[in-house]
Image (tube, rainbow, N blue to C red; front, side, top):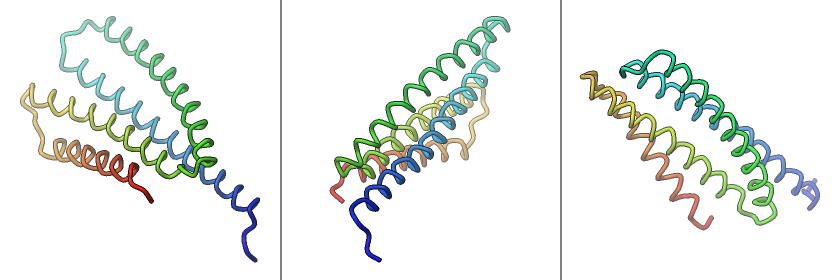
Amino acid sequence: MPFTNAMQTVLRYSLAYVFWLLTIALIVLVALVVRDSYEFFVAISRLHRYAAHAGNNFLTLLLGMVMLVALIFTEHWYRTGVANGKLVGRFMRVVALLLASVAVFHTLRVVGEASIGQWSLISTGIAALEWVAAAALWRFSRAKL
């Protein structure tokens, strides 16, 4: 049975929402990496415990608001991407930006580890791989498929 236009449209929008769910998971991952990086820097700094706790609460609130905005934006961007025929490229672009965000905070953590004499080749390699993957995804998202 061949696909009709209505069936193809439903499949495309279904794919957009699958991409959106994957994006939600990646946004949560970015938030966890940001929180982990903050906790690492609090542990190696001389920040007073009350100031660290207040910073943690503020960061949680800020991350929640940024996550909400990102969720609303990506859902709209993916839906309009279906209509424009640019869904896959848009998804790859969002994943590249989220992966670059993770890479930024892992790179900062590598710098922090080096500052206390705990530099690790594995941490450096993970950050480098994240940068390479983000650059490759960004490059492929711009290609004509």
